[in-house]
View 1: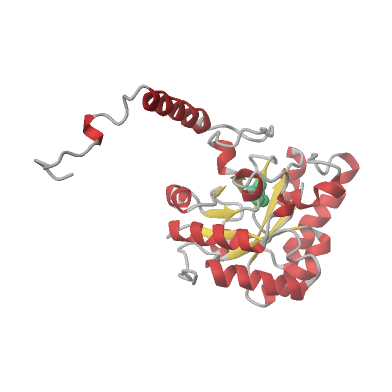
View 2 (view 1 turned 120 degrees about the vertical axis):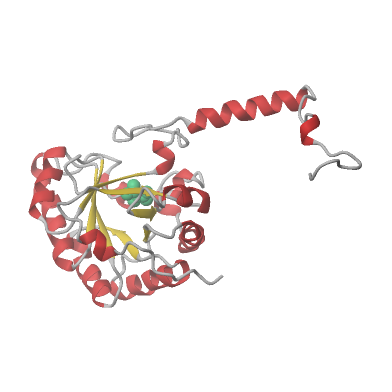
Length: 276
Ligand code: KIV
């Protein structure tokens, strides 16, 4: 299937230019209807590899494939006309080196129409980020808690406490110097997030970081109460759509069993008096 390669109204360079200005708003999306709902309110929409856990029931993001990202990226692209679409590079699609990363980033952009890719890692990804940016691929970096490294980090822990702060600062400087247009800071102490935000020249996008970041991102199913397997501390539930859906499904089931659905207004007469 060919992607809609139309440039969205907001570009990666627009996001970079928002450093220190009005906060940047972002959510994840994986489907056309959800992307449509957030296109007006969000500056960028992230097709996150969280899709693996949120929509496919995987235990982590490690099982997410290029094909899954492309399918969801194509769906999200159909719902956006304004917000920048950023797409995650899945685990195993970029870590071997710049050439592998370019091959897969170009495929993600070509087949989905995304305006930028996101990849996880700091100092160790500097060379790869520089290679991609120099060849026309805008890169959003992701440091602090990097979920694709859950097995070497020993779990989904806060990163950068005490002596660990220097490493996160070094990561932030490395990705900024390599040419990333923005960097996600996940699950780092508030004071460290504030320090990095004032230290580097590109926007910081917080998730479990600080209100002082240049922008925020959340997983949409978390903030709408649709993914309830667990709730990280940094998630604020803005709605309880999961409960509302469960209640609606239970009411439907009861009405079917009671033969009260479908009602007269849901069925068709032999000869309609008005248009069906
Ligand atoms: O995959 C994702 O949803 C993400 C956000 C949590 C930043 O990377």
